[in-house]
Image (cartoon, rainbow, N blue to C red; front, side):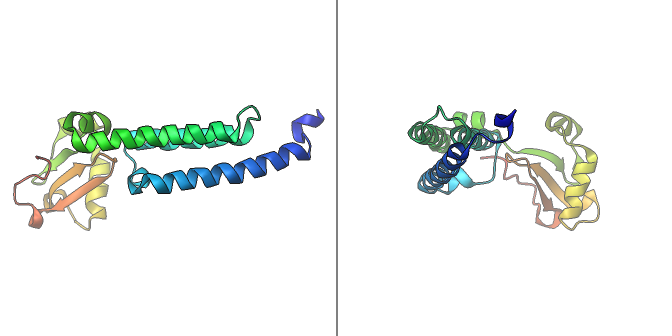
Length: 168
C-alpha cells in the first residue's frame, strides 16, 4: 500500500531530472525542425503532436526507457513529420493524402447541403462562422470554406468575385 502513494525520493528525483532533460530535448528538436512543426494543426500534425506528448510521458514515467531512447523517439517522430511535410510541399497527391483539401460549404449565400453532410458541419456551425465574420445573414457571405485545419473561412459577398481560391 505504501508504494501506491510514494516510491521514495529516488523516483521523484529521476522524474524531475529526466522531465527537465526530456522537455529540453523536445523543445530544442522542435525549434530545429522549423515553424511548420508548430503550425495550426491538421489531422497529421495532431497525430504527431499527440505522439510527442505520449513519448514525453513515457520517458518521464517509465524507468525502463532511457533518456537517449526518448531523444531518438522524439527525433524519429519529428524527422518523419519533416519528411512528410517536405514531400507534401513538392508532391500534390501526398499533400492531398496528408492534409486533405479545403471544401466549400456555402457559395453565393447558398449552403451546399451535400458538402456540409460530407464535412459533418451543421447549419448552426455555418451560421456561427458567418456571425463571427461580422456578417448578419448567409446572403452576406459569398463563400464559406472548411479549411484543412478544421477552421471555417468566410468570404464576404463584397470580396467574392466568383473565382475560387480552392482551385490551383
